[in-house]
Amino acid sequence: MKPSQKTDRARRAVFPGSFDPITRGHENILRRAAVLFDEVTLAIGVNQDKAGMFPLERRMEWCRATFADVPNIKVASFEGLTVDFCHSIEAGWLIRGVRNGGDFEYERTIAQMTKYLDSDLETMILFTDPEHAPISSSVVRDIVHHGGDVSRFVPDAVDLEGYGK
Image (cartoon, rainbow, N blue to C red; front, side, top):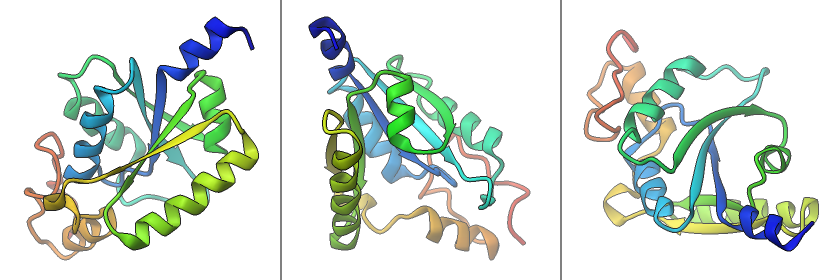
């Protein structure tokens, strides 16, 4: 790799996840990451064997609307290994969000495995601001499924009307 290519790659980051749905915790991490890099791609991973609660296109719409005011955040979807997606867009960094100790242990393992797959791909772990720590997509999905109000846990662009009970 030429030095200029490495420099370009070093300025691009990927924040991967299912974003099913995107939460205020995700938003918090991504807005903070956007000031650190020239370009950050919110990458929605697609697993054909595991259907999400919300359709991929809807999740992408919510993410685009949430970050419409941040020009260096892009939204994309991908299948397969995150490392391969990073290669495809020439990103040199992975952004991972952590809410608690359990998240940290999981993310540390993923970061170490990523190093085995690509020793040049760096992982940056950002801790969510404390007020967002208890929020997870799985808890939000459970509340939605039972007809509860999740408006304070998801960005304003997320419209969950018609989902749940």
